[in-house]
Image (cartoon, rainbow, N blue to C red; front, side, top):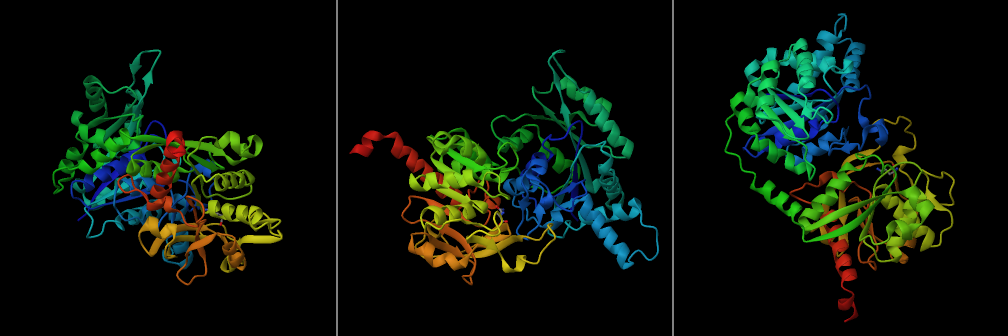
Length: 543
Ligand code: GLN
């Protein structure tokens, strides 16, 4: 029977519950256990797909097309646990299902209530991951203890231990120990209060993980243990990691978290072996070179909006033994200040996915600059669509070429809506979502990078390259190197005469890991590195 770990958070939001849960998953996997991870988000949107990246950060897409919270990205980067739409539930999704059942008459005339109907639905969401092939299910509860909207989730996980037995459940609470400069002291009171609130609901945490800026003394751990009714050895320090998030699991091991979990849940686990993780961190800390990549986007000022893109660039840097410095540029700043000023000295340009008009002219200008100056270019989703528009405008000389997302009536709609999208009016979950196959052309750059003929990548878009223009583009030197297996949908474009110009309709950033960089990101970073080296050795160039 699978065991359960419930991760809650207190004191403040943004404590890193997602990273901590992912780290716990990673450590248990490295002890030979089969884990599953899931997240509950206490907001009413059915999924984050309809939310602005400013509100929510990146929308992380799974193979099955689920649009999920970005913490699932951490789960996937840290572990090999398979993820599906059962791994992310919001209040909206839970209520939608309860209300659908009520409308169908499934409740047979009973009054439908938060307890037991909503809490039962939440418990069902937990137990559906606890299959026979699973040792541990890790469930992260979003939000902070004390939030009104989180209450049904906390109530449900409290009941869960009653249903399956307390010995099969472990409650881990993540808190903050703030350091007050004026007092010159770290304070434990907020932790005491947040555990107090949990206990009021009926949950006694088994382990406390304490985020600290400056470390925790033995006396502090003892005090927290006493006030919170937790063993002193179960008060674990998690110090801020300024260098890399990938160091979090290592620091948790130093504080024996994996041993504690294995012991408390009575798991049959192997000794821990994280040699692969240590060697990844060693490479990350000791790069042989340094390159600069420009990411030209629209939500650049929001740290989490392009999370997986930034992580994938780092992963490729680890594999290529180079530090990747990311220059984050707003498309609009290129419009006002010019490409030269913003892109001077970069070794590669990446244009990520996005929606809407703002910043598009700047992105297109950046692509033109990369194409004309032989700077490696990587376009992703909207990045491909912009690359196609740029090529139509400046190489094909097609006046007023655009995507119909921006200008419905443009003269040359080189990117337009898919047929099946025309009649759709609902916004939630209606894009082309999830994993689709892509056939790679023989001898293409993409085929070389992937080392395969057929690949599968995740999608999240409505618009497509307009096939009417294919021949015209091909004649002028753009290659359609990846298509859907029936040849109908353009998935990848390249310019073979350019050192490295590649754009994809999919989102490869959702399939990159720190220990296994995505081949396209790696190829892009290697190309950036080659350009950097060539530019750095003018003598060699002259020879
Ligand atoms: N807005 C574009 C479309 O819907 C691109 C989407 C994206 O970049 N994810 O097709």
